[in-house]
Image 1 (cartoon, rainbow, N blue to C red):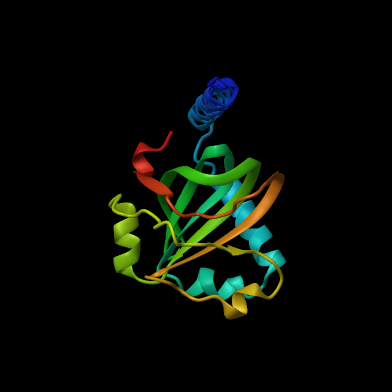
Image 2: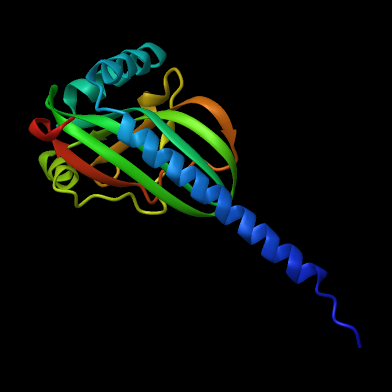
Length: 190
């Protein structure tokens, strides 16, 4: 009886390739995040763009206790993936700091994508969990993909509503589950 080691060899090579790609992605994201700054101008441009696409979001911006705006999040993966981005945090319309977002995902996914994300906090409790670094999206949380009129049916879930807008790339997988956030007070922003 002859044992065919070709399948095992291919699986091992694919696994090594996936880890190399993932390592490259994370090192690129880490460098990009260090170079990026918390840019309030880009956050304001993102807010304007979101309102332009769906004017109904004005009510979310006006009535939420606070919100976090991530102008650009980079995401990529092959089986195992990750995402990272920097955002600006507002409390009742005033900028109070920034936030770093990271995400690691495992499952069926392939490709790379860049998108914007806005997270609305319905009340002080959900906002305070976020700025006290006690907030992480559960695996089942999903975002509302921004398009005209979509906000009319959107609602808060556990005090949070999330909207995203694709900016470029192609990726088969689009969840926000597993995102982790680290709040940075305004006086510590660089």
